[in-house]
Amino acid sequence: MSTLPFIPFTRPSFNQETIAAVGEVLRSGWVTSGPKLAEFESTLSDYFGGRPVRCFANGTSTMKIALQVLGIGEGDEVITTPISWIATSNVILSVGAKPVFVDIDPITRNIDLDKVSAALTPKTRAIMPVYLAGLPVDMDQLYALAKKHHLRVIEDAAQAFGSLWKGQKIGSFGDLVSFSFQANKNLSTVEGGCLVFNTADEAKLGEKFRLQGLTRQGIDGMDVDVLGGKDNLTDVNAVIGLHQLKQLPEFQARRAALAHQYFDALRSEMKSIGLDNLALQLPPENFTESNWHMFQVLLPLAQLNVDRAQVMTELKDLGIGTGVHYPAITNFTLYKNLGYQVSDTPIAEHIGRSILTLPLFPGMADSDIGRIVQALCQILKKHLKS
Ligand SMILES: *Cc1c(COP(=O)(O)O)cnc(C)c1O
Image (tube, rainbow, N blue to C red; front, side, top):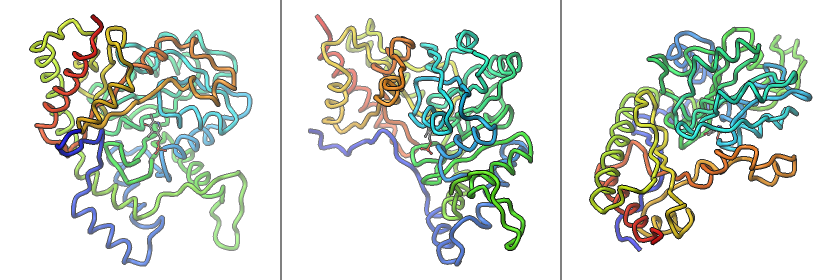
């Protein structure tokens, strides 16, 4: 057991100004969706170059509403990746459509766009890529593919707030782009999400789905013409988001600096303790436009005599929290019962078994990186197969 303080794999950062602003909203007499939400949405719209933006209760409801806005449901298929948070494919199922899993690229760990064409059928309506750890797919290829096959795109950019593609912000171009503001994300409203639209009409439809399907025609003229839910974001959450946006550049700079410290520390530590030949796969380093939502390595399980769970337990005993993001979705009972097979997406299956998320968040100390890297390398060395 370590006597040093525990380092969680992530931790949100809220400053005193944010805490004071929440107090102000609570004292104001208006706590649910109101003026702060309107201000947050218009600030986000400016951030995304003037595109319409609406906020929702969480990233899951945001993506579900994106599907509803497109009228996707029974009989439709949506192409997506098996390596994501379960929400991505759950929302497809929840509107009655069918998720079609395409295997991933082993380097980026995102959907392999070269394999999408083979998965298309006359029922395919949309493609829903996920930007794992904040790393986008090849956006030129994505939109060329969508155009060629007349598909809509719902980008699950839950982890990619602040990431860029060729210098442009993710969300500032493209089709529907969904973000999550859940506690662990780079920009957090505690819980929340937003959808970036192309047209005011689709944004209006999104608004309708987020509040019971109400058509807004005055108190007496109230009517409902579609089945909506209760998925609004409150002013309490919105004011947190407004302050997080101000801190974002500072958060991003810190994440990038820490990620680069990881690369340096891992390389030098592995070399100095003779682990040069270990196939510990680091994230793609040349990708400088990532928001570094997570720092993930692939454990060289074939070279070890222990499994990932044991490595995680030993790290925890040394005061270091880690995470698994994610096992392939096809492993889950719900999906197995629907007939999905892990063997259909073998790269995802392999990576889902060996991927490990190391701590990375703006509040980390520089010295934490050295401690984590040393602990990980010692554990790997101890368990090398002879
Ligand atoms: C966080 C996340 C979601 C869901 O967002 P919630 O706000 O937790 O509902 C969806 N997809 C991915 C890839 C995520 O990381």
